[in-house]
Image (cartoon, rainbow, N blue to C red; front, side, top):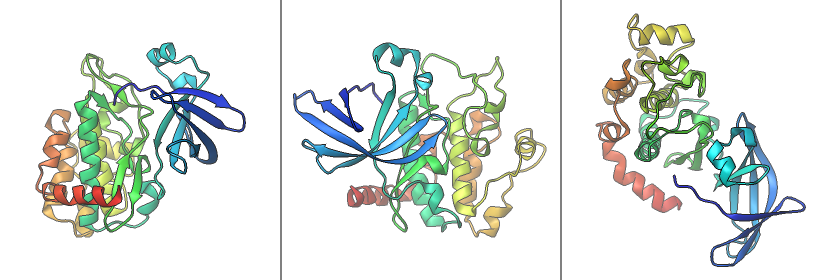
Length: 280
């Protein structure tokens, strides 16, 4: 969550040469295109020389139009790159063609919620939480996941958020669609998205089929659509958790810290720590 720059020279054939603070160098070679989104292209790279030889990483290449003014002033490069851990099992979306058992869902949500807590503690809002932005390090039944893709994340320290339509429609909080100039949206938009992810993983579908249905709930015209949760055999604690992070009013939604203390998640903290040690 801190500004970090690495002295890099771009060599022929997709090779990057990093000069470390110690004076040592590393050569990384681009091997495979992993995917492309609205905010850049992700490549698989392998270290071919240096202390990390044989290591693999994912690198996101972002056009300059998606780099903030401050970053443009700091980095005099034609393009902007973000280096990340490489997750060999892809994203969570590719693993949830069918709904997952409740315990596995809770394990995943503990980890995502911890990531959101960290993001919010550093005064950032992710704004695009969804299964395809959650990377899978270890697969079921243990599950080790990481939140990724901060392409539309925003530092909210000392500023209001008014940008509309930022994120992915099915997972966006209603207030993002048309934020009022008088009432900017807050980090609570991530909690709504987090609840939508939990609903999707547990039931295999989204809570609403259309924007109109979502706003009917948001405007207190209809109740929360808990029938898919009931049909999936979800516990009362699971349903309560999802509804608590998807409360109509942003101020009524659980914070990430409160969500981790919810009865549905809090007993799994130690087990998740064990998973981290096993998969690291």
